Image (cartoon, rainbow, N blue to C red; front, side):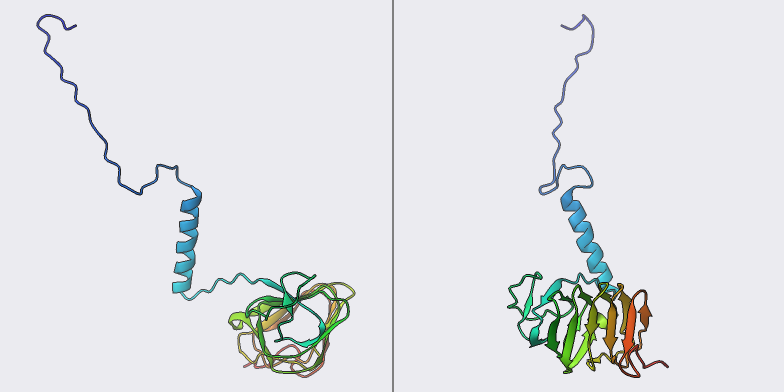
Length: 195
C-alpha cells in the first residue's frame, strides 16, 4: 500500500546480457592456466627460445646400431621403436653393447655399464646445446672412438659417480665434470673448436 499523496514508484527489471562463450569461472581455472602456458610457449618460440621436453628412450643394449629400431619407452622394453631426435638415451641393460650411428640426443643416462664396440656416424645434441651425461656409481658409459658433434655451441655436463669414456669431437660449448671420472680417448675428448 502506498500512503496518500506519496508518488508512485515504478519498478524496472534490468536484464544482463552475457557474451556467449565467456566462462563465469573464477580466475585461475585450468583452462586459463593452459591458455597462459600455450601463449607463453608461443611467445618464447617467436623470440627464438626453444623449450624442449626430452622424452626418455631405453636402448636394447644387444649390439645393435644406435639408429636401429631397438629403443623402448621403459628399461623392460619392448625395444621396437626408432630413436626420436632430442630424446634422452638411456642405457639400462647390464653390460649392454651397441654400435655407433648418427642420432641427435637431449642427454644420456647410464644406469648400467654400456659400451659402443664400433664407431659410426656422428652423435649430435638437441638444438646444438649442452646436454647432461649421467652415469651411475660403479658403471661405465664407454663411447670408444665414436665421433661427437662439431657444433661450436654443443657441450656436455658429466654427472653421477660413474665413468664416462669418449674420444669426443670438436664441439665448442664446453665440457663440465661435476662428478665422477672421465677417460679421454682422444685429443678432443672434452671438446675443441675453441677460438
